[in-house]
Length: 162
Image 1 (cartoon, rainbow, N blue to C red):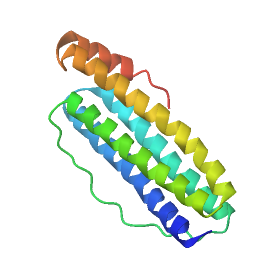
Image 2 (cartoon, rainbow, N blue to C red; image 1 turned 60 degrees about the horizontal axis):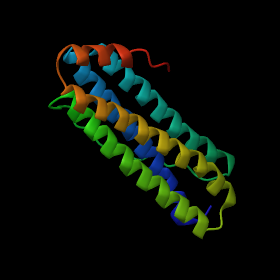
Image 3 (cartoon, rainbow, N blue to C red; image 1 turned 180 degrees about the vertical axis):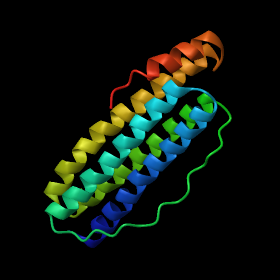
């Protein structure tokens, strides 16, 4: 594996694990504020991010690339509202999309077809990640992050399987 791509993939393992930490931090805040359904949705999201890190990990093992686990920074732990959480979620997913797109560019420049094909899964996944975050955020904006509608959204998000 080409050096720049190799380093970027190690970095992406860290980024995916940071995403899990971020969503767990958000879930903890929601638990404290008595939004167990939203906390559940975020915990499922955190598990999904760990599985994304493992996809990179396993791919690198399969192609014989050395894995170097990098330090994961501490995520924020205080949020102003559920809407704030999903604004930050959408912002974060857009950042991850950019990181994935950069990896695709590196893989193409390196003419690394296996990496390019593997990364296509992540390109598609990021479309879904942004769509889900945006949908919840738009719902929160409609209900103004309060009242019975917020309780109903909390119950709806509790149904997420994972």
